Length: 218
Image 1 (cartoon, one colour):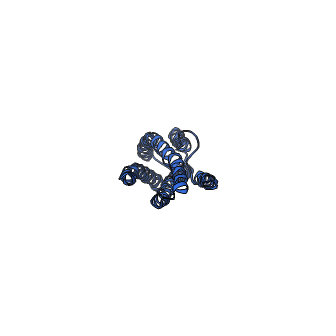
Image 2 (image 1 turned 135 degrees about the horizontal axis):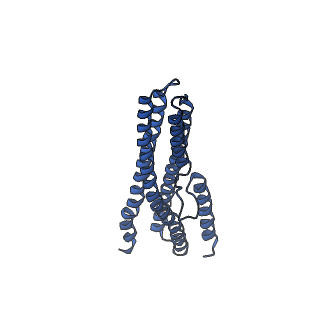
Image 3 (image 1 turned 60 degrees about the vertical axis):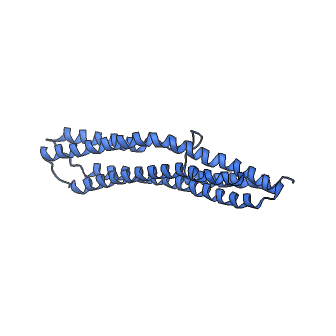
C-alpha cells in the first residue's frame, strides 16, 4: 500500500506547474497582442504632417497601450513569485528526492522505485524546460515590443505647429520603452534568473548529484 502513496501525489504535483504554465502562456499572449497593437499603430502612422485630430487620436491610443502594459506588469510581478517558488520546489526538492530514491534502490534493489525514479525525473526535466522556455519567450516578445516602439518613434512627424505634441508623444513612448526594458524578471527565489541557459546548468548539476549517489558504495 505504501508503494502507491507517491502515485496519489502525482496529480497534485502536476496541477501546480500546469496552472503556472497556463498563466505564463496567457501573459505571453497578452504581450503579443500589445506588440501587434504597436505594429498596427506604426503602420497607420504615415510620414507627413499631422493635424490636431491625428495627434489627439494617437495620444488616446498610446495611453490605452500604456495602461495595458502597466496591467501586464502587475500580473507579471504576481506570477513571477509563484513561478520562482514553484521552480525551486520542482527542481531542488525533486533532485534530492530522486537522489534518495536512487540510493534506496541501490541499497535494496527495488524495481518499482527504478520505474518511478525515471518517470519522476523526466517529468521534472520537462516541467523545468517548459518554464524556462516560456520565460525566454516573454523576453523575446518584450524585445519585439521595444523594436515596434522604436519604429513608431521614427515615423512620428515633427512640425513647428505641433512640436509640443511631437515631444509629448516621444516622451510617452520612451516611458513605455523603459517600462519594457525594466520589466520584472522571473527568478528562482532571487537566486538566479530562470532561462534556458540555467536549465542546462541545472541538468549538469543533476548529473553530478546522480553520479555522486551512484558512486557511493553499497
